[in-house]
Image (cartoon, rainbow, N blue to C red; front, side):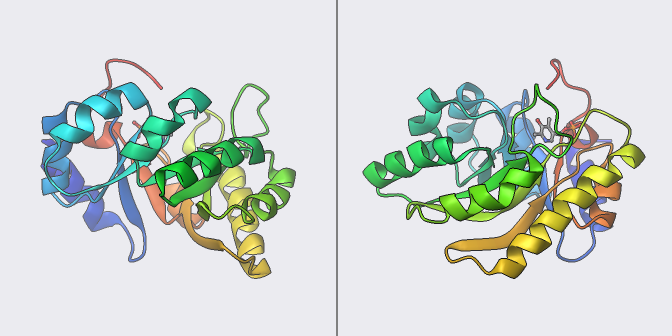
Length: 220
Ligand SMILES: *Cc1c(COP(=O)(O)O)cnc(C)c1O
């Protein structure tokens, strides 16, 4: 099956209100273009260097999200390239981003990445710290929190359920606090192997790579 057909298949499976983000790391511009022409609207990229090369080559309109690990020395480029950064995990990083956005005269939409498996080697905020981090970041005027994102541990889909549940609970709880300058609209959870479980647990943005483009030449 081709990329376009894969996109149409997945789009037809998604319940109303759930959006598709194509995870485009390692993919060529023409492949991304094909997915957008089939109806994909949001493209996720993990590496600034790749995004810099590919974004100007993709002529179809799309929303570009950064889903990789954020490095401070790449923030200027990221502000130029991306419409949303899904992987902000600390007040410190958000503060630097806020300052740089001010210089660029741009307001950046962000998601707070939750380390829902509390894995020491992984990025993202610890679940118990998320609300406090959201409250601090809400004071910055050049970044706007739009929701939460999580990966969860590298386990089979069914075993990811508790991590998705935890992240959804945080999402609902923070939304109910009605914090000024914070919108809890986007809950980004689920990948090729886990998006169905993630949707059952409340995801409204699924990030899908392999199931659309086929196996990658390198791994995440
Ligand atoms: C690669 C990647 C995905 C998609 O993974 P697949 O298993 O190829 O669907 C989703 N989210 C992030 C953050 C990724 O790096």
